[in-house]
Length: 631
Image (cartoon, rainbow, N blue to C red; front, side):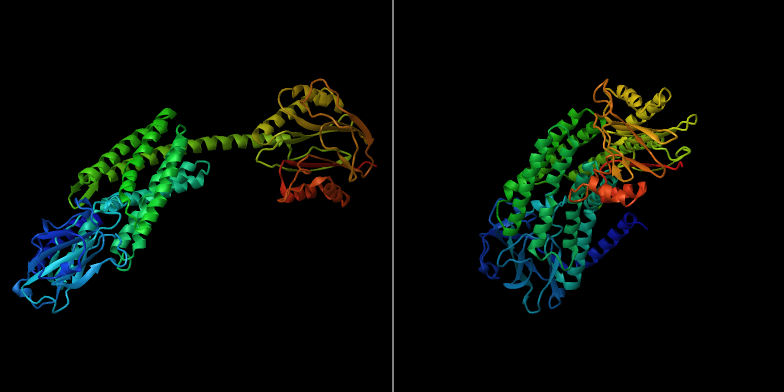
């Protein structure tokens, strides 16, 4: 059976228990109040006729008097059947500290009044009456009470609940009083279940926001929404824990910690709204700084017992709506559907907050509605609608982002398929030559390329190796264009210089590319043209060649051409600058000297490329070796 279905049975059982205990307890009414503090006011023979008559105080902060100390006195007649029995006095859930005196004798207290009183969370208590304290049928009750420096507004604002006294103080059989206090405590907890449900909803929203942020780290609004929701929910749970725990609740620092944590939702909400808004972001962030300063002042005041709660309470009443109204304007000016939806809901929630808090501050009447055993706070309802709306909007925004990401991944997949034309997986048959290559892109799609084009008619071999300036998809697409141009140019000429000239014209206005074109004839005669690329290494030694500009720099220029003989067992190595520019954590380059040492040790193309990658890859790495195997 669910909790909601069990509630009527629990309440009915509780009512029956309370009815059975009515004859065993006596409610104490007709109270008188006096401001100030005087230990003599606990005496049973005190003449309190000049004290002001009052009903038992619900919330002392709403009284006209601002004096921090209050004494309340009343008398009660003990029924004959209760005289001589084990008695207790039941106190309702009052905030702040108090002491209870019966006929001038201190029988118990809530909180700590010496040396410095503090406001604590309200709690139903049953104080046993020591035997011999009550000597007659009439007992004089005196309550010494301290109004804490922060008043009951903390209960109303930070915990999102309504504080009210559930019954008059009562005296009677100890077992009956204790049972009634427990029942009232449970009844109060049931009333506040909507507030607890709101806190659970915020905690659930925090978990969802954290999951969204873990998937999309580029969306910081998810992280700030998570922190805002945590600040809006965790203090509620801590407050409930303090109210119910038999161990917690008696120390002032606990209330200070929970209440300070409970108001951090204001600056965090301002930051969250600032991240959402493109307009007025600076205003909201500046407001968040001010709000954080108030949080620090509030926390210090709670700890030091300062008495300047009024300006801070008013600040925290109207600061959030100010942030929200600024955010509404910014969201509406963004002119997109998500911002418009959040802006409209935020405007409604801001109106509910101002209306409810104003009623509390000025009319002393919380904007709440009682439905059955539950109390529904207007702000809780507004928060529920707001958080649902934000989660729905951010969810659809998340789906749009995921769709874009999926589209980008599909584009990258297509680009990787195109990359196979830039860096062929399987090299063609090259009679008379052994070719080995290694390619390690810095990203999923690189800008390095090479082509190996053997000529079956004369047995010659054309090799083109290049590096597009830049990284990623754009560089990869430009390299694809160059590879196509290479294949077209090779259909017209096998001259390396002419091939580079044709590529240079094709590249005008499209970017810069370093490139080297090499043609090796069957007998080993080689011609090499260079356009700003690294010189090749022959048998481990760097070949000296004239420098040149990269392709695409200037139209109509000629590229230097060199001729050499590739003998049997000679090894020629071509590479991109990703080898030289590899950089370790201390900023040291892999460098030409290290390349020379490895080549003289007769390293392979794969060995050189992997060494540079482990050293600290910064750019695409391409290494290609050509070995003549002709006699």
